[in-house]
Image (cartoon, rainbow, N blue to C red):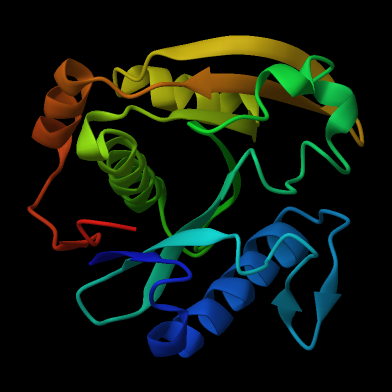
Length: 202
């Protein structure tokens, strides 16, 4: 199951949000050895506020296996803070319709096939959300080059904005605006139909 969590339904997903922070701890802190803020086995930062939305992916047993965070660029986000040097023309994106993608994490115990499947479902959810109400959203993401290549392999039209490094790791700032044609092709790549919980109005 894929579910969108945000200000409209935080109260009914408190446990899911805590499990999201736990997954991020396992993925970013324990697995990737990133220098991130942690506390009591959770990875949470100052951008995990009521302005944030989360997509979570659960397997058939109900275990949380993947997540990502969405923040509209009109709000405070990581491109305002630790990543501001990566987007020198930030003011061009601080307007409605632009959203930052961050903290995309997948259970490090997943094998390569499972990783790609969960990644595909999360990208599909972004595409679906981005096309809601016929007002396409543009996503900005800071990613590892392999994630960008994986997205391209799924037919996602990724636009390169900047390339740099953080802690000696190559990173890419990219933009992605979903379109209906690529969304349909992405849906066809899904191995099995999946329930998607996104409210009609937010």
